[in-house]
Image (cartoon, rainbow, N blue to C red; front, top):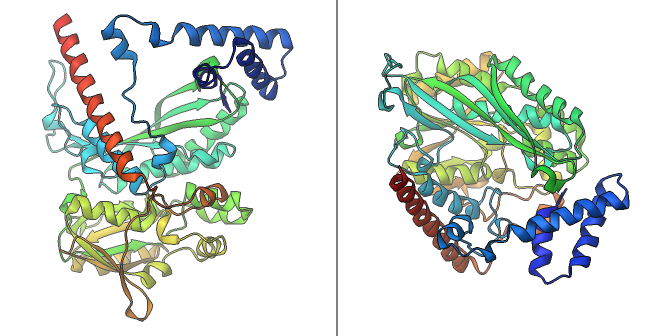
Length: 463
């Protein structure tokens, strides 16, 4: 994949001559496309001209310049570990949540750092032609991004991202009613890649009995990006009358966990370590089936929250859950280990990946003691393993008890467990300049809010 626009702007910034820039773009075209020299130079000239004309340095109108400019943090996404499901990622997502806050309030907003968001029908402003009779109804929504390393394996990419999106609705107590698709492909991607991805999405749609209702298919960057990458995401909508929010977890709750064989992350680990046979272990819908049973049970009211083990693995999820629920937990590591698919666990141990720091596609259930045994029994009847792994306390810490009663406090690392070779080379440690980076990032977020407010006021005055 080559971002020709990003490359050109960077070369201009570095002071490369016009001829040097054109030659570099032409080389990129030859690397990705079967194209003659004349056409490649014609395209390269057009790209250079567009980048020069769109340079905001020449803009004299301060309003337009501010509108088009970026409030830079001077910290890259990669250096901050965004998308890497660790402490660096969590820090930025808290700021994104702040930017998401407006006067139109959600029942469960991004600020909750929960699995999905929700709005109550009774809170929606009524219009003349819409009658909202069932005021108890809550609409739950989720957007799930495609796993970046599964671009070359579109069917399983579509399968796992769709399952993950539905998963996040179920854990909020919602019944999924709609799946929507956003797919972006590089200019040189084979059209068959799109169909294979859609086949993976629709496989989950069929298995979960949730219809696909809408979607969008675009090229990445239009004519400015070449290559065959696949990116995008799946959004899903569900309905419920009670949201299982993390904020409702109570001290004394039992914590249950179902068996986990992983999804996109485990698939990626298996493929890129050459252990392709492990991919088969991830092809199931046990998580969704477990949620269906629980949502239709007589003890549903005794369940206070459900979560899936994804972001940064169990160590990352527990940290985030504690933060939102204002509680602590004691977890028994040996009980957790028993619930990890043995073939998946063997893979992780063989390639040196901490299983507590990666997505396991397991279900966490916070419930009363009386509901605990019923849940374990009901799931056992349909061949889904489930066991109690810990308890909620008021310490605000994640304490884990290992073999021989060794107790440790566990915290999320700067990044999730490094599950591919390149991730291991980059590492999981926090950068030495972390404090300075965070200050710059917070400043950029604050400036973005100021910019938003300024533009809102401008639009209001125009009206």
